[in-house]
Image (cartoon, rainbow, N blue to C red; front, top):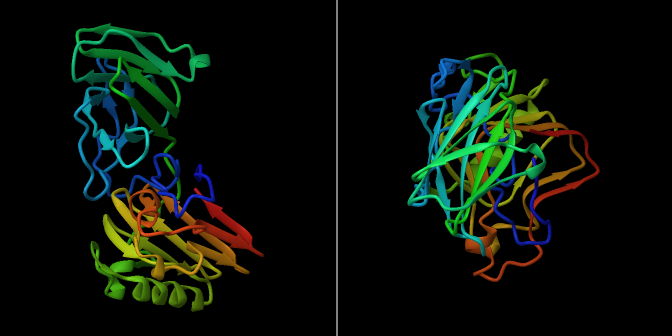
Length: 288
């Protein structure tokens, strides 16, 4: 995971610029886990479900081993960009085809040290990769396209298994229309109070919240398409969106999204010196 600069007000952890690990293959929209590309090569590819209210890119589309992916358009930053996320095991080559909104003139694929060879024809750019990783493609003046290709996570929790609690069982709203700080905090406190802790499972949906104080022995799992959305009201925070203070044995995992609303909300409402994550006096904290 890469966390954006701490001093920006609750910078959006768009786990595209943020968590290579905060989205998993639970209930994701799957592009046939063992699909075949144009050469008939079998490879394991999982296409993540789009986050709630995601805007489809009008600049780029993408095909992965012949299966349609989703490219999200993001305009909330100073430099507009597009991105797609997926999981790929690297056991066999992955054929990627990018479809631009117009004929392709020039293009770049970064990191350049990977020396990826591509072929262009009309508005299509095709290339193959051999391993997961993050790539940045730029075609003419269409802006950046981030390809965020994770390794599949292991040990994914399953609802119904002992110790795995569905956050919806605590009466939490998943539409993103209600501030659910109090209910989410109660769920965290209850999980921590269990002798061996609990996994709090967030299904696909949007969960609007202010500051949450993580407790010891709590594991949070975000299913693909699950979005923890920070409130854009400064009064809903003391210091950060997620606060870890004097706690141990805490984890956040999965391929969901945590968005601190810093760029689009808190900055406009006067938020300053707020953090996405704050940690102090902690031990055995895992974020992936």
